[in-house]
Image (cartoon, rainbow, N blue to C red):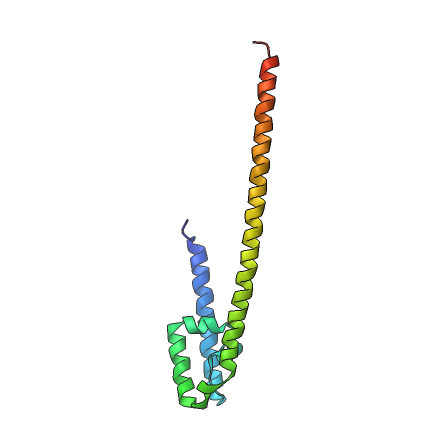
Length: 135
């Protein structure tokens, strides 16, 4: 596997940094407004996924700390449904990817068979042409 070019790595780091900044700003706004803190609330406010928040150790700690301060925020029913909808989306995308992979495998097999036939015909035509050529 070839390594990712530096300009793409920089762009990915920049995107991640911007998303982290958006999440921090959203968390601060929710805290300032006195709203209950949850991963789902922060994700919605910041425009990022809950998965992104869970995978970012620093953001995760901050959200969990604020959520624990709020007490009832940790018992929000919205968070499990946010996770299940994320999981449902992942499952749907995985199923779609599996179907596409199977379709591609079938197409590759069909094309390989067609190529074998074409190569066989090509070989047969070259042999018959060689019989008629004069040296």
